[in-house]
Image (cartoon, rainbow, N blue to C red):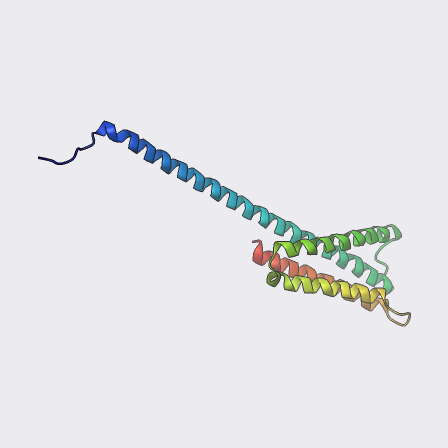
Length: 167
């Protein structure tokens, strides 16, 4: 004689359905979790990219302005009066936007990844301060060239960071 009772197929159906439902529910939860994680990563990537793009754009505006100012100081006319006003306005906006985006950059990256960009930004500011504090005997064109060169370096560092962390 056999001991115990064997379950009939009709008695197994509720257990099979419950098992299938649990597997489907678990799969749906995993899917939702993966979508949330992917969305967060994509948003972080986009913020990083947009911030670095803005830093590059602002740096180029500084380079353009100070290269033009440098040429004018050297006696080579490259801009007219209205263009000079426009460059001065763009320069003011670029410096403000650059300051803002450097602050944001520190929220988006680990410090060790952005050290070169931060140092390049410090160098740009130092060059700007040097230009503001020149004496009457100093040659302003050299200081303007220095600002342009430092802003160009900042742009290159931001591009390099974007290529490493955003591509």
